[in-house]
Structure formats: structure tokens, C-alpha cells
Amino acid sequence: MIKIIPSLIGMIIFCCSCKQPVKTASPSGYDLTRPEILKMPSGLNELSGIAFSNGNPDTLYAEQDEEGRLFYFPVASLDVKHQKFGKKGDYEDIAVCNGTVVMLRSDGVLFSFPLNTNGDEAISGVQETAGILPAGEYEAIYADEAASLLYVLCKNCNADNGTKSITGYILQMAPGKTIELKSDFRVNTTDIAAKLDEKKLSFRPSALAKNNSNSQWYIVSSVNKLLVITDNKWSIKEAYPLDPALFPQPEGIAFDKEGNLYISNERSQGANATILKFTLQKVKS
Picture 1 (cartoon, helix red, strand yellow):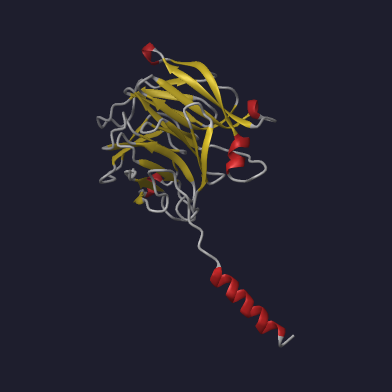
Picture 2: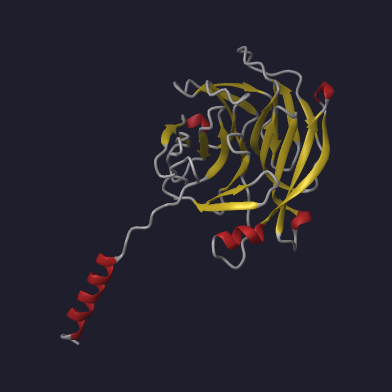
């Protein structure tokens, strides 16, 4: 035994010294290992969703999943202000569509109201839309302002039980700011698993946004620690595991009009919530 142990130790040291570090893969135009990190104040520790209005990077809108408040702040200064729109609840994501804010509660109920950050403590004219989405758990909403459409993606819906897909719903922001169900779509979870060389995958989306610079959809899953990219027909193109050190709990995603990518994280292990900004890089010709 005395002669064998040193030999085993030598072999282990040799193997470890030969092992190459694993490089985190990133989608074209972004480096997921080198973000600008924006540390949120404690009032936004439960940060669940983020959005821009018409991609304007000057102001970021956000909500957190415990209070019925709209938060907004300049990205440059993080001077956070807020307005109350409703009671406490499990609010999971936010969208801004042509001057209207839409808050998504986890049970699929939507709360919409005019975007008016004039300093009023309470927001008036809040419209509640219930029963438009099937029973389930929802965490992801995105607004296509040009078409006045809302995209909502299931996290865990009864309609998807026993299937190999996640269902999404397209809602029309009708005149008068009413919201109507238009159609649905599906994201194939088997194709995501194949991209990751896994046999199966229980995919649980927490946010989605469209990258208008390439017309691709970016879907974040906090549970799976994944970034999934589809084309505009929802076919899976890429899937990237996210580093838990940078993405402890990714719950929100947005793009500004310059194509820069933002991913938000809720507080984790005592650390404040963060927003990670990934600047769009020019692809060398």
C-alpha cells in the first residue's frame, strides 16, 4: 500500500494538469462571460421581470414578485422610483406595449395600465384581465409594440402535461386597450434536450424576449439555468447552459433598440439582485 499510494497521487496530479478549462459558449454577438453588472438596491431583491419602452435604453421598467408596484430607473444611475398599481401578489414579468404597462401574475391574470411616470404614488385606470389564459403557472411575457401583440409562455401548464412541448399564447392589444386571445404556439422541449445532448428535459421558462437585430427569440429558464434561442417560427436553434456564478436566478430578459442584451437575477444567498448587460458585439467580416 505504501508504494502504491504515491503512484496513484502522481497519476491524479498528471490527469488534473492535463485537463483543459471549460469555456462557456455564447450566442453570436454576445459574450455571456463578460457582462456589465448592475447591482440592484435591496427594494428590488425579488426582481422578476424587466422591459424597455420601444427599446429606449434610457429607462428600464421592472417589477418584483411580492408587491404590486411598477419600478423604473435610468440604467446609467439606478435611481429607482416606483408607483403602486395593485395589491401584493406573485407578479412574475412585465411588458410595455405602446404606452401601456402589462403585468403578468403567476396564475395568468394580467394587469394593464397607462405608462405615466409623473411621480404619482398610486396608478389609476388599472384593468384586470382574467380567464384569457388556460390554467397553469406563467412567468414570461413580451410585447411586440409594432404589431400590438403580447407573447405569454407557460412555465408549467396543464395543457402541456404528457407532451414534449411548452405552449405559448399570442394576445392582441385591441383598440381601447382590451386584451384578446389570438392564437398559440409551441416550443419543442425534445429539441432543446437534443441540443444539450440530454435524453429528456423538463423545461421551465421564466422569461422571453425577441432580438430584433436577428428576429430570434431568447428564452431564459431559471430552474434549468439555460438560455434557449429559437427562430421566428419557434424552431430551436441553440441552447446555452448559464454559469450559476453569474446567473444564480435568472428571471428576466430584455433587449434595447441597439441590440444589447439584459438578463436580470433575483437575490441569491444573501447577495443583491443584479441586471447583467451584454453589449452587442460587431461580427467581424
